[in-house]
Length: 122
Image (cartoon, rainbow, N blue to C red; front, side):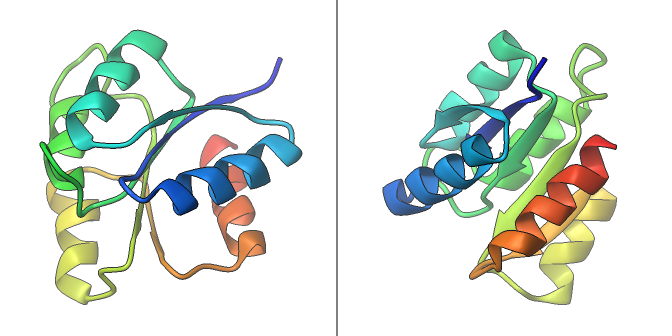
């Protein structure tokens, strides 16, 4: 059975390109275009992985990550932060403070994304 990935990003081109790449590699993909919708989909869909942008309307990626990791029902869902914010502070907050399982910087190499997804999903 295909692993389900929730992709949350407010840029339609990113959603389309990344979703197509993941589907081409055998993953089932669900998408959301803002943080609030992403949180609701994570709760209802119970994906195997959430790929989460940081800068989004309604709720940012940090808030979504913290909400999921702070709830016993969803804290085991791995989260890969996927952002153009490349600073060490963003990485530290995402991984240490919010509990994300990985951090990938945009723009990205498709092979790097797929390798990170495979690593997190085991």
